[in-house]
Image (cartoon, rainbow, N blue to C red):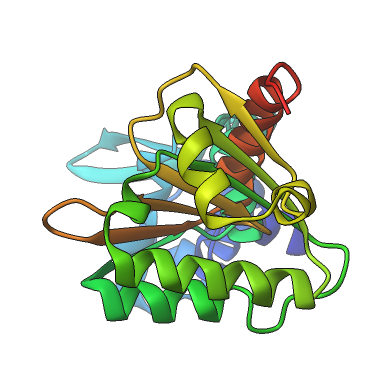
Length: 243
């Protein structure tokens, strides 16, 4: 009976249970004969059926007589299986979500490694894509990093990226020394009093955390969910900031 196998019973378990339904109370001999299950396996199969409450036995004259439980118990088994499935569905859906939104974190140390990582970030960028950035200004304390950012800005503009940069208000004079007013306008720069703990970039489904301190480090996290959260946070501040 295929339906029992669909409930999770093996072929032999199904055959033994069906044999007992027809035989009523029986010793192992008739069960083996009717079910076709080898005598060497009959106790093992009966044991599994007893564990599931489908078979019980009584001892008559020193011998075990097995009998099938009421077939209605199969409904209980189906209900139990349905409840188990209900319990695992949320976990499976969560796994599915993570599969659709794979998360990965990479760490880059040293200026050269960070320069390469940021360059690769926009390597295949398409015109019109957003590039959002929180900047704290420490990058401009190092001349080589400052030069890199000037060239990097040019590359982003050449690719037609929509730049929006949110800067600490204390950077205003520094920016005005490095960039022309037209350039500052092109990069969509705005100033805020909000103090960021570090530089942050949001591009596509990546969030980049930049530390230009003594141990220069970039942490790039790939996550659709995280990038969405940071994008929302960026715009919440950017829309209130001064041009």
